[in-house]
Each structure stands twice: as C-alpha cells, then as structure tokens.
Length: 250
Image 1: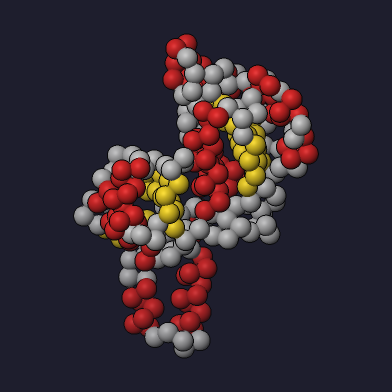
Image 2 (image 1 turned 120 degrees about the vertical axis):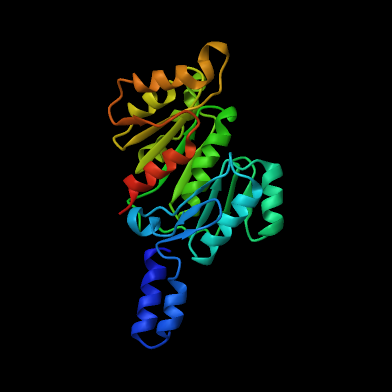
C-alpha cells in the first residue's frame, strides 16, 4: 500500500466510483496483515517511502510465497533479497509473475518505471572488480525496482585507476555514488576525493585470508580521510541502495 494506491481508493470512494464496502475490503489488511509465520507491514511505504522487503536467506520458499502473495495484493513494487536459485525456482513456480535476477539473488515484481522528476539525479554504482558484481547488482536491482535512475561502472578498481578516470563525466554527474570494493577497500576513498556528492561505501567479503571476510575493507573505508563518505555493512548492497534512495529523493 503506497501513497498512490491509498489516494486512488479514497478518491474513488469520494467520487462514488467505489462503494464503502468495496473500499473497506481493499483496506481490510491496512496497515498490517498477520499471517501464520509473519506480520506483513503494508503501511511501511507510506511511512518511509520504502516498501516492506522480504529477506529470503533464512526463509523457506513457502514462507516467501505466503508473504509475497500478501504484498502483491496491495500493489506496488515487490522485492525479495538473498534468494538462492533453487529457492527462487520453487517460488516462481507458485508465483510466475515474479522475475529472478540471478546475479543479485533478488526476486522482483511490479517494478516502478524510472522516474527522473522524483529524484535529484542518478545514482552511480561503481564496483572495484568483477567479483564484487553480485553485491553491486543487489544495489542496482533494488534501485531500479523502485524507479530510481541508476547508472553503473563495473570493474574499475584502484589496480587500474585509468578505468575510473576515463569515466570522469559519468562520475561527476551523479547525485549519489555507491562504491563497492573488497580486498583493501581503497576505492571509496579515491572516489570521495573526486566528487562533492554523497558517497556510500560497501565493503565486500572478496579477498584473500588477511581480508578477514571483508573486515579489512570495512576498516579501510571507516578510516578513510575522504569527506562525505559513509559506510554500510559488509556485502550490504541492499542497505546502500536504501540509503541512496533516501538521499536522492527530490
């Protein structure tokens, strides 16, 4: 249930296009709906601008189907993150309208069309190496599903800095930049020194033994001297996308 859907229901009631009973039926699970193993927050989009998103990693396919079915009845974009391919196959068998993005491990439905006038500009997603693409795609698919203008620049890490500098106009034209890097996590500091827009760093778990599963990259980003850089959790492309959505809304 988003602002547009609620406004339509109330306007139709006011204009006599819908009866009171029909309107109440549409609102019967507003603001929340209790299922057997979940309580679905249909009010979240109105409060925060972000719909409730299904975290699929620790849920069964049956639980995802149940929650997704509830959300789909209310309209608006649907996102289920961290869904592996086997679980996705089971979910899409029951809900064939869902689209599975394998690199991002995300299920989507009812994606909003890209809206330029709702945002200050585009969010640019930069990732250091090809191994960081799954996290970058989690961020990109999340933003695209929300109708957020998004551009990408992949495999542009500090080991070959010319790849970044060649795209100077793309970088300086962004309203927000999400920078995703593993190993030593240096790329957000480099980008932060080139631009004046907010930069969101995402450390990834990519790296050899002393990277400690992304902790080295996390600490590198947290200790950056570049101004305007904030950092989210390891491998949290979704969280970075949500922050970019909040920053970039007009």
